[in-house]
Length: 297
Ligand SMILES: Nc1nc2c(ncn2[C@@H]2O[C@H](COP(=O)(O)OP(=O)(O)OP(=O)(O)O)[C@@H](O)[C@H]2O)c(=O)[nH]1
Ligand SMILES: [Mg+2]
Image (cartoon, rainbow, N blue to C red):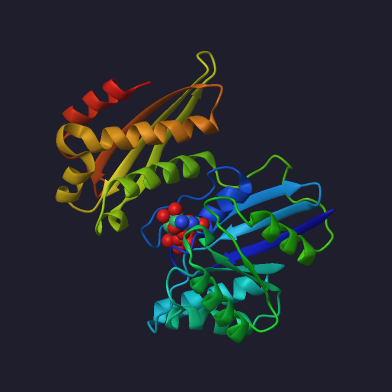
């Protein structure tokens, strides 16, 4: 049996979380078109007859001269050295710029194996693929270069084949059915954050936080009860999040319900979802309780 830890690295929105979800065949890490969607190092676990790969989905690597960012980069480099391999995802819909240069420079100094993958093949022109390959050959000489579409599950088996080549022999670290090590509250809150982020535009996605305050299982009724709060920074953002007549929060609730249900397929689910500003209770409670009743499946 083989067992490896693999860190996925790449610029914001390169498709790191999408790839983890495709590989793990479940929503392990949330995705959205907004850069910096992933805020924590999230683990996705893949197991087959070859062994196990434990992926770490990292927040998009963003280069900056600022001290804090510099420190984050140092932490990233140190944590990469502790993995068995690094999977570098390059989104070739954008021309490699200084950020990509910073990543390849950092990766070229690593002693662990690095597998490069050009993602979003489904929307790339032959020219874009050729340019990205040339860039990677130049800046990452000697490293394997693959091409895939994380979204369409195309070329993903080849990524696994390559990573298993670098995996050391070892016992499985997680149960073979495990997909992630996140606790239930976190998974539920991330699903809601994804639906909330994808329901609004502009800068609001960055103001969104989700907290699951209660998650209870009633054995007699075989029912899971969840109460969660979407927290935003300003009253105006709350208005947008709730939407006219509660339209938007209703949409978020229905979409969240569908995905949370997949975690508890054989239980009834009750989801009480509310919006608040900075953790304090404000207006709109009437609308919300109405929406709650209307959308309760
Ligand atoms: N067409 C296409 N879109 C993709 C592919 N992979 C990811 N995307 C889209 O790219 C956007 C960003 O994907 P994410 O998986 O959230 O990207 P990420 O690298 O995790 O981003 P951060 O967490 O912000 O660093 C989403 O809208 C995805 O649907 C792909 O293979 N093809
Ligand atoms: Mg992500």
